[in-house]
Image (cartoon, rainbow, N blue to C red; front, side, top):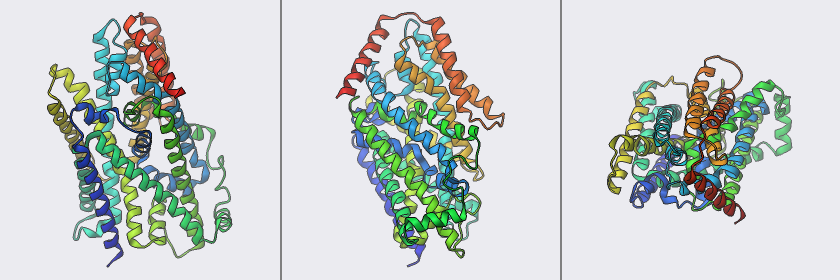
Length: 509
């Protein structure tokens, strides 16, 4: 049996497992709350692993190792910023958001939380805020999902292009994109939030195992840590420097990715689905532990690859330009094809876990936050679930159409969407949770200014990542406008105090 046949068997086993989990989760979806939020029943471990897997995508296994291989440890500033941002997000936002969304009319989406939290004396403005937030989510995530499908098509084209006999490279890409997109849609369509969450857990564990095994085996193959270190220094003397190869502004912009966590709907929705605010502490420890191990594994993979290819002149990287294939190339070299196949599956896991989470949140924006405003009537629980599935399908189809062009820029689109969500939603989330004087007018103004600033700044071509000016501008505008428009409201004041009490009691538990 050929090596590619073994690898295809591993990929098929992985696909079958994901579909099985999706159909298992389908039996637990009785209403829209179950379909979009899992009935608020996630354990800390499940929430943490699913948040990590849906966050990292293929960047962790391909983008980060490739950047480190080419540019040295300076490229780790993004990973450092993301790790710090994730820790703060779990520490500050998770328990508070879990408590507040339940207290504030059992909000099950981020826009519905904004609506309920800021309704005050003018319900019309808070409803407008909900619609605008839903439109922002739907717009950004449609393109975000599309970028994941482009990554899936590119992966299949590079790894299994020869399987599609007689097909052109463009056709191989299209077939691969449809396979990855179709299977992800299938288990998300029926499994909903729980399907996406539990497949994320399996995918997160697979990613962790792959990122630990590949560098460990590589170090053993190369003779031990000392030999690896010496080979790296000989090939790239500044490889272990956090300052060589870049500027202060470049490092600051890379680290600023951590600001984006506070506004990523597909990540913070996991906080809303926890069983209680008290679960955030265990979730933080598990989630950050997973993140540190996988990031260290990605860094180690890059350096092991650097040492291996420097000491084996006959071996060549598949992608010599960006080195994003270093993780895949090393797995092919070190392991039996069936094991290498499961390592390939880990890359697909990273891609598909992000797509599925984003599809569910996009569906929630379409159904819970936009359709409900239009229909203005209450549907039966079963009809709500099917409307949620229709939302997943609509977003997926549009994303697949957009992904039909294999030349689409994945990294730029992801960076832009991350900045857009971080600047538009991040300041509003933090202020809504920790500042009682935030108003609907302030939140709406801050959200719009944050999104517009990101759009405008991205066109300037400066070295400063657009999330920095966007986040600052949104915060300032939200605070100033809220200060001018604030009027005390007994009900919202009571909810703020109750959420503060619940979050504090959870932190002490």
